[in-house]
Amino acid sequence: MKPQKGAIGIVGVLLGMIIVAGLAAPAMPNLVSSTAAIDLRPGEIAITGAVNKTFAPIKKEAGKLMNSITINLFEKTLGGVTLTFPADTQPGTYAIEDHLHKPVVDVLAEYDVFGPNHAFYLSTQGKLVLTAVGAKFSGHFEFSAGHNKDESKTIKVVGSFDAVTFKAN
Image 1: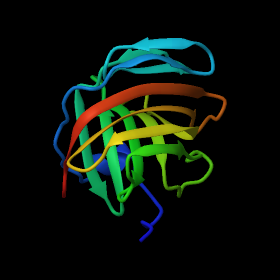
Image 2: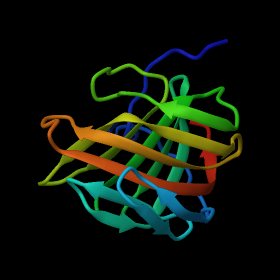
Image 3: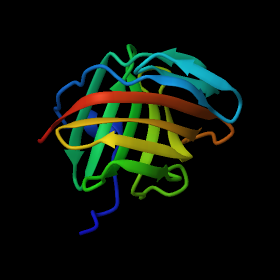
C-alpha cells in the first residue's frame, strides 16, 4: 500500500508531535557537495550558501505524522533540519524532492529557523540514504533548498543521523 502523499516539517511537529530523542550518529567523512568536500564529525550537519554553519543537533526525534515518518534534528537555536518520507520506506537511497515548488511530495527536507529572523528553506533536490528504519532510524542526507519567500536565497545541507528512536504518537 502506497502511503498518502503529504508531509509537514518542524512546524507540524511543534504544533503537536511529542517524540523521543535519538542517540549518536554515524561517521560522515568527506561528503562532497557541489562546491567542495566537507569533513563532518559523526552526527554533524553543514549548511552552506545563504546560511553558513555547522552544528551537532542537541535533540533528535523521529515520529509518525499522518502517513509519513518525520525526523527532526534540532540545533541549539530554535529550528533545525527536518526529513520526511513515507512510513513504509525501507533502507535504501531516495531522491529528496522539490518541496519549494510542490507543496505535496513523498520525500522532502527542510531547514527551518524560528524567532525574529525566521526562515524556511524547502528542498529543491537531494538524496536521502536510510541505513536503518523501524524502532531506530539511521542514515545520511544531502540536499539543496530555497527560501520560501525569496528563491534567490539558497543553501546546501549535508549531514547524518544514527539510532534516532521512533516513538509512535
